[in-house]
Length: 170
Image (cartoon, rainbow, N blue to C red):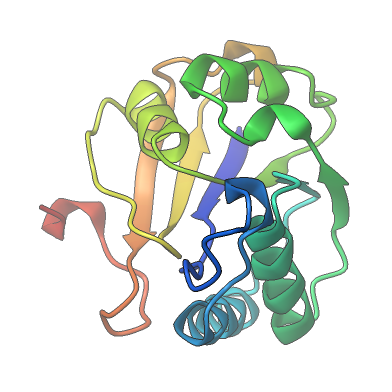
């Protein structure tokens, strides 16, 4: 049994239009959302063995705030394929994770995050910025992921910070 946490980066700023997409920072609302996710991670005692993060500025800032708020000691790796990665690229990244790793937190972007969630669970759900999902995977290796996931919960920003049962999701 493996556990995958998917986190879409928090809300980014479009204030400086001269910046490339890759270099956009978080806006204040995004920083607040990242802190809220960090508090949830701490409260729920979520300690993934490995964090895989897109190297884009907004994802780096999101995970930095989450890790600091949650006091999360997990190993962090930046993976270029997550930036602009479709579900198959994201699946390939996960497939390279050592089978001894039991839980992974992946921080990335849409549409990749939503598409990966659907590919793994069969559920087409929206993941707005700072959405956070937990997927239980009935597999022994990260190479066996497709359609083996059960969505345990999905937390979206703007709603009370509590873990939501997927049965109540739209």
